[in-house]
Image (tube, rainbow, N blue to C red):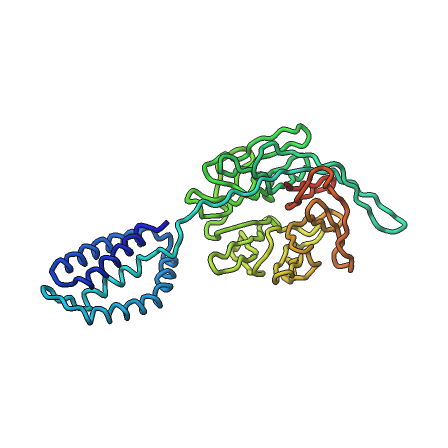
Length: 394
C-alpha cells in the first residue's frame, strides 16, 4: 500500500499534468496552490514520522538523482507553458516538484509485523564420561533427552545455575519475552521477570546476587544490558550508552564480552568492556552469538564469521590481549559449548559432535537423538560439573 504522502504526490502529479494540458485560466494556479498546500502537509508528516535524522538524510540522498532528472524534464515543460490569465514561472513550480520528490515514499513499503520466532523446546540430557586410561581418552555417554518446557512457543537461551540445580531460560508468551527458572530436582518452573518489556539472554552475574539480561525497552528498539536481583528487587541499568546489545558474557567481576549490533549497513561486532574504567576494546567484526569462558584458562571463546563458509571458533586471551584460532566450526553452525575437560560440543540436526581443539582432531559424532524426536538442535549449555547438557531443539 502507498503512504498518504505517496498518494498525495500521485494526485499532485496527475493534477499538474492536467494543468499543463489545459493551462488557460486562473483555475490552473488555484489547483497548483491547492496541491502545494496538501504536499506541504504531507511533507510535515514525513518529517514527524521519521524515526531518525540519519534515516531521513539517507532517504533524501536516495532521491537526489531522480529529482534532478525530474526537475530537468519539468523545467522543459514549464518553459513551453502558455498561460493567458496567469503566467507561472519555473521558480514558482520548482519548489512544488522538490516537495513532491522529498515526500514520495512509494518505493518504501509499509512496515509489516516482525515474524514470530520459531517454536522451540529445551531438553536436558545426563552426561557420563568413561575414561580409558590405557588409550588416555575418554568416551562420552548420553542419556535420553528430557523436555523441561511445557509451553508451546519460543523457549530458548538456557543458562545453568552454578549449583547445577536450576536452569534460567527465555520464553516468549503473549508476544513478550520473560525469564523463567526450571528446578531440576523438583521439575517446577517459576517466572523470574514479569515486565512490560522483553528480557533475553539470562546470565548470572559474578556477585551471584543478580542476573543480567538483554532488555528490549519500552520503545521496542532500544536493547541494553540490565540486571535483576534474584531476591525480586527492582531492575537497574548496567550499561547506559552501549546499545544495541545482542549477547553478553561476564568474563570476570568487571570484564564483559559484548556482541553489539552494527545497525543498517554496518556489521555486528565484538568488544570487551571494563565496568571499572568504562572503556571498551574492539575485537572483531561479524562474531557469532555464543560467547563462552574457556575451561581452566583466562580466556573466552567466540565464533568468528570470517567469510561465507569460513567460520572459526577463536579464543581471546585476557592477559596477552591476543586472539588465537582453535578450530573451524561444523559447516553453517555457530552454537557450541565447552565440557569441563576441554572438549567442544556442537550440534547439527539431531546429532552431537565433539572435538578437542588444537590437537589436530576432527569433529566426531558422539550422540544421535533422532529416535527421541529431536529434529534440529541449536543452542547448547553445559552444567558446571559437566554432568548435564541443555539443548534447544525443535
